Each structure stands twice: as structure tokens, then as C-alpha cells.
Amino acid sequence: MIPLDAVYALAGLLFMGVALAVGLDPGERRGMVRAGFYFLLAVSFLLGGQLGDAANGALVLGLVGLAASGALEGGKGEGDVRPDFQPAPAWKLFVPALTLPVVAMVASLVLPQVRIGGAPLLSPVAKSLPAMAGLALGVLAALALAMGLLRRPLTDPVQSARGLLQAVGWAALLPQLLAALGAVFALSGVGTAVSHLVATALPSPDRLSVVLVYCLGMALFTIVMGNAFAAFPVMTAGIGLPLIVGRFHGDPAVMGAIGMLSGFCGTLVTPMAANFNLVPAALLQLRDRYGVIRAQAPTAALLLAGNTALMYFLVFPKP
Image (cartoon, rainbow, N blue to C red; front, side, top):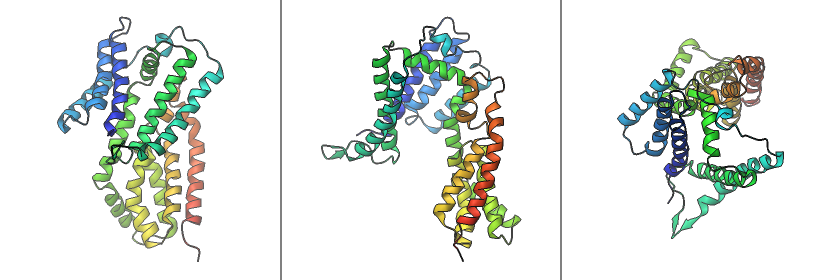
């Protein structure tokens, strides 16, 4: 039976390869210190499930300390670690890129049905495992196909990952940190606190006021958390379900769909969504690291206004 930890282990092996590549490169400035960051990141993926809370906490503090110390600045980018890079025909890039989502989708549907000796192939404990396992198989299939088509050295995937991670820097930690932040907010009862604040500020709320608070709250919490999926349970538990659905009998499906779109408006204007807003600026070597956010801000404002209007006119039952 394959557990979810097996998928995390693949990511851990990649980070370990990056740590070795950085640490063993004599031309890498502060290479051993920088390698320590990727080594700790690899340990978190490889052994995080076996480590206790205190050990995982110490590991996270070590990662944050190394990132805050500036140890990740000035690392070699992809152009430095792959000076022999040559452009490839477009179809050789397109075929592996298309292979990944196709294999991921098919595998995520087929793997949960596979049984060996009467036992399921995938552990039923983790509900996200089929999608994660499908994605892992898609990555492996696309990687094998790309290596065959492009005839590149076996070290190329690690070196490319090294160049990308060093261009991104500390922002590589944000997906894990933001996921943890969303869980902490939900478990700490932030949704209940938001509900009390709204009840105090709006003792007699009407339909327009609750829609405005919900849509704006989704955008603002997403700006803080960097992830609309983390903001959604907080705002829905605090405002969406008790007020829009409970008091005014709104349609929960419409509320959820447009609420998420309102949250994505916040994604467009927050540096916390580093994979969308900071990573492209770093990879394109833009002079203004917040240039992507500045360009997207007007669109985000217009979309948020439009989503709020749609929510007001569509979520409530017609008289």
C-alpha cells in the first residue's frame, strides 16, 4: 500500500540532490551554508512525518534563520549551472508538457481502483493521495520522455531545479508556510472571531452589507495569507454560512464559487503569493520585483467589484 509520504519523498529526494549539487560546487559562494537550507528542506519532506512536533519546529526555525541571514542571496542561476544550454524544437518541449497533465488525470482516476491481493494500492487514509500520486506519476513520465527526446545528462533535472530554486530564493518556502498558516487560522477559531466582529460592527446587517464584507474579506484575507484556499474556510465560517446562507438563505454553491473568485483578486496583489507574483519577476530579472503586482492591481480592483456585484445579484433567491 502506497502512503502519502511516498509522494513527499520524491520531492525530498529532489531537494537533497539540489543540496548536494550546491554543497559540492567549489564555485558556489557560501555553498555549504546555502546547501544547509536545501538539506533541511529535504529532511522536512523525507522525514517530516516521523519527526516529532519539537523537531519539526526546530527544523522550520533553522530554515527561516538561514533565509533571514541572506544565505540564499547571490546563488548561481540556471544560466550559470547550465552554460551549455541549447534551445530545443518546440514539439520536443510541448509533448512532455502535455504528457504531464494527461498522465496525472488518468492516474488519479485509475489508481484508486487498483487493488493488490484484495488491498487497495493507495492508502485510503489520505483523501488527496490519488491526485498527488497522479501528479507524481505525470511528472515522472514527462521527465522520462523529455530526457529521451532531448538527450540531456541525467544530472540536468537536478541542475535545472537548482537554478530555479536559487532564482526564487526564500520564496520556495511559501507554499508550505501558507498551508500551515491557513490550518492554524482555521483551528484557532479566527472564523468565529470574524463573525463576532461583524456582528458588533453590523448589528442589523442587510444583504448588501454582508456581501460586501464577505467579498472584501476574502480578498483581504487572501492578501494576508497569500492563498484564497486558506482564506475561504475562515471567511465562510465567519460570514458566508451564518449570514449569507443562514440568515438570508443564499445559495451556498454560488457563494462558494464567487467567493473564491473574490479571493483570487487578492492573489493578484500580494507578495505572499510568491509563485504568481515574485517568482516571475525573479525569473524574468525585472528591475522592479513588485512589477507584476503593480501591473495586475487595476485588473484586481475591477474584478473584485464585478464579483461583488455578481454575488449580490445571483446568490440570493428571487422574490
